[in-house]
Image 1 (cartoon, one colour):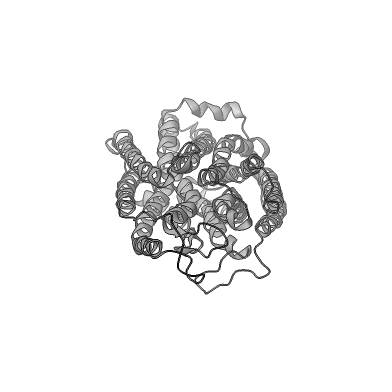
Image 2 (image 1 turned 90 degrees about the horizontal axis):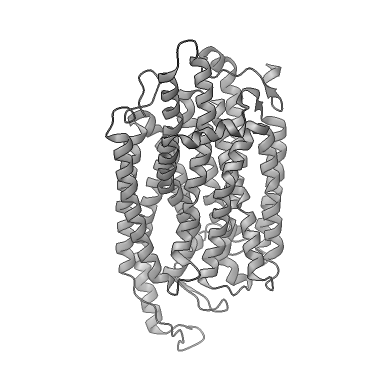
Length: 500
């Protein structure tokens, strides 16, 4: 068993062998999964660090416009999407343990730069954009982590393992959005948890996650493993670019994960823009405080993800994904309807006294919109839940599609090698789909508040209409490619006659 302890490279790894799995593989895979989740969790938190801090920058003395704030939120998502491809290929090249150490250590760059920048209100906006771009390093952790864990588990266990790994990482978004306002002294939680004392200090979040990144790197060094059998060259992995299913699944993943990460990034600013009124930091704000609710979307989507993998195992990933897009269309229409009911808030904030700095008209409009917020939140959380389920179901489909194709083409003599090749290729497809899907995290915030948009409030309504139309296209694609056929529509508990 010493050959399977943490910190070593494992040469013999046959998870499809039930005897090996029960005696050795399961325990080793679980240990690697736990520390993979921890590192990926931190990566997601750093990746979405700007999603919540951008909404707090005015409180720290920065005077950026709404469009500038949306761009700060979007930039890390673009970099995170682009960097996922090299992170995916790094696992079979350098080893899962080795790359986890590197990727965790790399998080020191965005965290420490963030801590420095937010203490200097005179910092130019373009410098903030560059620093926000480095947060994209955290987005790459997902691709390498998923590619790595895919090698550790047998095909029949991949759905739950990949779902747990992804959900643990996705929860990093909810954690940063919930606890950052508390840690930096910005806000508490419904009076149950108080904000940190000692004033408002955004830099605390940067320092905290820098320390946690070091912990993750050290833990990976001592407790994770490389698998020598997972080695392959980028040329071998790039072969999947010629596969039809690589691009179909990548497209569908834009609809599921792209929505999850894009809405997660934009949600704090969406709530603040539509339901909160505070013209200047020195005047107490009125309406709905985003700090109380922004984390809920990412939390719901993250918790739903393993459930999506389980549903895919039970009923078939294609069918689950199909109904996911039906639900996302319904939720988006609900959000649009709620937004059309909002009352325009007058720009005149002058009240009758210092105790009441807002006019009666402003207070009435904000109160009317606040009454609609529960309906907006429920519809939005419905979209998050559906996207989370879709994330789990689509990722469950990828390894099984390639495994089924490999089994069909293999002979009894070549079955073992074919399955190993399918595992390597599915890790590559997972990384590519993750990279393409993550582009939604950039496009969604930009659609809400790009620099050329003069009226972000109106643009938000139009944007949700565009997203609803896109989900219709995803729905049609899922039905046409997978559900209407029998080869990729059924359940996926085993490979014997299995369908996706």
